[in-house]
Length: 286
Image (cartoon, rainbow, N blue to C red; front, top):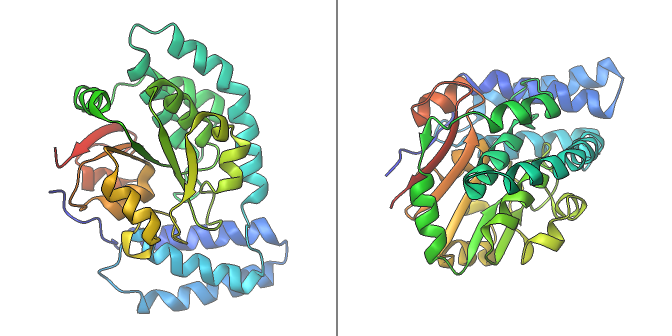
């Protein structure tokens, strides 16, 4: 079993960066942004040390929404990311179609979409980075196990991560050629994918259904999810988990899960056992 991904001291500056970022997205008032940062900074000494980053993120972003009165500070950047990703969709479909191993290529395309992340504060260029990462071999590569699991599976649960990334999830879902239930966040948090974002990405045509996990956290934390989602999670023949937030919440789960992600920070890389910047196709509990 993988050890539980708990919060590290190195995570704290990221939470403050997210706070400043969210502040700039909703206002030009430097005084209000400073007040938001001060409010979040005051929370830090009281954050439970045994919580995962998504659990802490839920508390912090709930407070940001309360202070700003904005339900979805990242709405405009999510829309922009989806539009940019949709422009790349035909080229990525062609790349998969012409590949000698279409499924593996579709997995790499889906992982490449994981660069679209405002939670880590890393800069990215969608067009340049997507093409670079699709040529990158995963540092952990359980694609053989992935294919074996897919062959046996009749029901697949696919846990989405970021909004723009969902366009590239769509490419993998279309290549799986099995009924897929795509999971989105319960409410807007960071730039994570919601039901509306998934529909904008075209996933309502590609997935069997789109369902909310019920959580308000920027990741899948089972105690914070709905009973309906937990039932689906426990019964699915195959679970595919995208991104760092879902990894942080599920790294100790007692059931088979495939994690598809790019290690975008030293904390995650160290926890998984790879280098920062590496991509990962990792199955646990098989």
